[in-house]
Image (cartoon, rainbow, N blue to C red; front, side, top):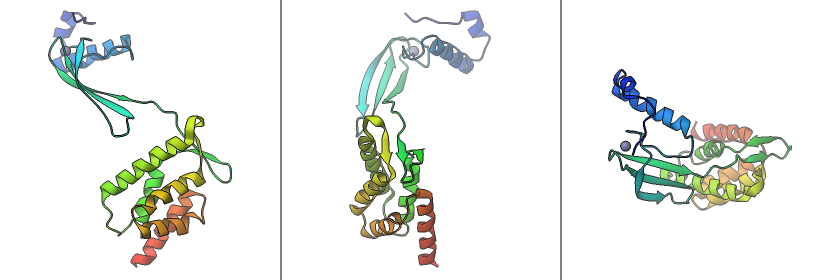
Length: 190
Ligand SMILES: [Zn+2]
């Protein structure tokens, strides 16, 4: 049996779409994090039709069917991870941000005709290895990130590797480093 949190008189007086989200939200706030409710009728009785985890087992996608109204919906479970702190050479700290590495790699691979998919995979590998190295302390040194990036780049393109290496070794600060690569790229293309 499905339990509704709003009486029918109230439901009739508001548009259908709005009423759905309203009692869905009410249901959510009443049972936050405990029960999965159908987005269509807010019943908490569903069956899982299909479960699929991503390549690295860090998230699970489940296809569900509501046993009350037959509505099908998808839920995602993701492992909650504490943010990683990067310790720089000068001991300053910042949160790990894969987008910074991405910018560096995009700069290094400029005009090398490397497929977007290859870069995406590369970034995924880097992030997984960084998370592993950060361990339970969730801390990593900026030099480890640089070396990991170099290691991964060396597997896909020598030119990109040399570009990254020549600039990376001279700088600790990733921002400074990206500016330098961008300057080099401008030099090459002008
Ligand atoms: Zn339903």
